[in-house]
Amino acid sequence: GRRVEGLGAPATVSGGDRVRDLPAVEEPDPDTGAIVRELNGRELPGPEDAAQANAQLAWIEATLKASTADFLVVAGHYPVYSICEHGPTSYLQEHLKPLLQTYAVTAYMNGHDHCAEHIAVPGDTAHVDYHTIGSAHTNNPSTAHKGWPFTPAGAVKFHDGPGDGGFATVAASN
Image: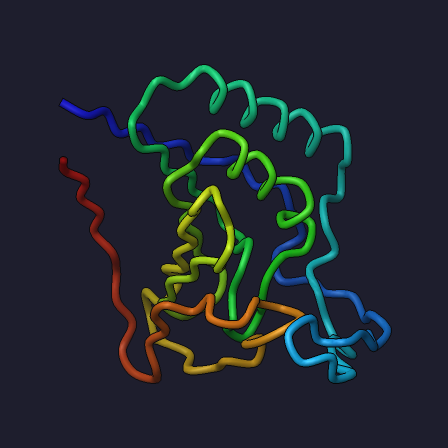
């Protein structure tokens, strides 16, 4: 049979929901060329301890590299991509996403944002599926981070609207 292996990634971003103010970003949208002014607001600050974060990333890479599983699932608290209220985590996009792609991770699952969504980035040859499952108590319908520069066009495959929260079960089969 096919092997499925799960990896609970240690948190590489710390500090709860602390945020920092960032300046607005003005860049052309890669699809339309339109100037977009976004992110005049908040983002997770990244790791408090860079050495610890680097050690965790090294552990994640060693674990992924050693795996012989047919399917690899990595779980962490913060999202790599999210269109919901808190949005994506640029630190994870810069440091974790390349590992997910290099080692052909099947899916990355996270909480943090209080929503349920499935994101698959078009043109990503590694085909990593990003799942936010953070709506255990209630589902926040926010799509505050939908679209470029937060999430590439066409990436959102599922996003649940308002309502009661839920949970996820995961099954893999050949």
